Image 1 (cartoon, helix red, strand yellow):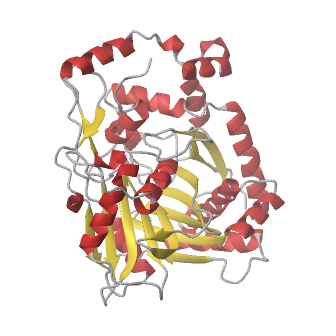
Image 2: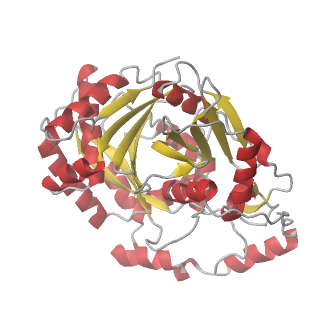
Image 3: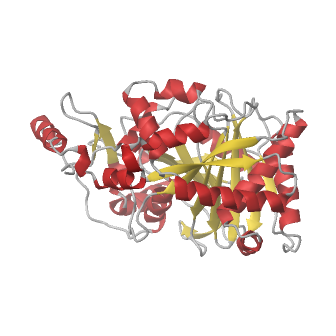
Length: 458
């Protein structure tokens, strides 16, 4: 029996449990506006435009309300003090204003923890030397939604229908009603949960799904990739033509996500060899995110509906083609044999025990995380201006000091690597390895199909 109120799910709460000042659970998107089409955009006009579109994304006007015990899980309520000026700002691009500078700015804007007393998002209009708009940076807390949901939420915010109707916040529900709702929901036995029935059907004998993940995760290699994440991060972006990527993947019986994993594996092989660490026989354990949302879902998607599979990446394999084929077989087995939400259930249990953050800092089950998002197929406009490129940025947590996030946009595939700056001063080595493998996997890629941008340390 579902709640009458929009309560946070266990997956949502995980993003609050593992967060720390060093590892804010934020997502970001850097939308670079097309040169030659840029213009001055007054901040007041931008705020007014965003406010008129918030009706299409009501979660962006809401805050997390924690009812007194026994009120149950936190719920989303309207912010009685909402002000768009608190969320929409303007910032000058640091010199020289090129893409590395925009990446440095994006990383800096992501780091401060968002104030949980107000809606958990911020948007910046980035201006050039002449005051013209050159980019837009949006930062969103992961508790609001997952990667796929963020794409829909951002689309509604920047390109959705406008409403001139005045907005008045709904008052928080009475505590008594929240408690009664919690009691009513708890009467529903867990065996009636459809998701629980699916998992039991998939795992005969009533075995705990997370047990399979734990068995597979044992023996994760100890490498320099894992370690506490500091406050300073680095970003790197590799871009390839989407049609070229699809052709190269299909040639080896793989998917685009398999290709992203293979390129990341080649880059990490080069990095570990450069650090004089062994790669023979080494298979890195990677958590590969997968959406659990219905494929026909429409409109802004809120809440976290993502799971993951554990995939072993063969950094021991020197041949890029053989590596891609092996990864395709490994991901196929993972999808057949693993329950996509088993890892979430393990982390939920640890969160309830109050040790989720400790576990994230000390775990030796996973070496890195990877996600792949399908972005807009056609160019979009922001503030009425065409967007040339979108760089997605994920988050780092615990001792997972490197992550890979890929997203398609308007015929290109951007692969963003985010890493702890202290542990990855040699990140260019990884990116060079990825570029080298790409030229092997698709020697016929058109000119300009590959580029990479590295964030230089300040």
